[in-house]
Length: 228
Image (cartoon, rainbow, N blue to C red):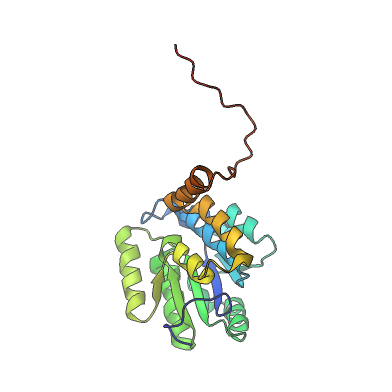
């Protein structure tokens, strides 16, 4: 395994760490609605490419609250690996789930979580120290208590070999080639829903340039202008 190898659906696994409301309340490094959009977009990307996905939570009932409903909707049957430690690597369930996927050749671990400077950093450092896995940190599906905290945490992780990424970068690296038609339509639909200006541009191109159908099911009339 080499960091020169791009992410593929065969060499990757994904872990979401503590995407819970009380953790999100403290995030100041990114708009929280944008954070949720990016997190759910990453989750849907994993579903498209059948990426084994782990969801771990901390102190759900005692402090952090329940995982984003939108994230659970993507993986309604996924077990939630509950912890007490801020460092996911301290929990045997998490280690075993990662090891099971790694044994199948999935040693590129894509990570998104809250907070960047605590749960993400401690997990990344501990995992790298104990294994031969590679860590790919999805910066825009993660958040810190301040922008400074997030950035310095990313810097610290990069210094020890963690690879920084964005959720859309992960998606398009998994797709790699638009000739892969088995995932093409799903990826384009995901982009239109979650990728902001990129998705709007595709919507415009489909309907205005190529004269395709709108993706909305709107059935109401469009009323012509009437001068007042």
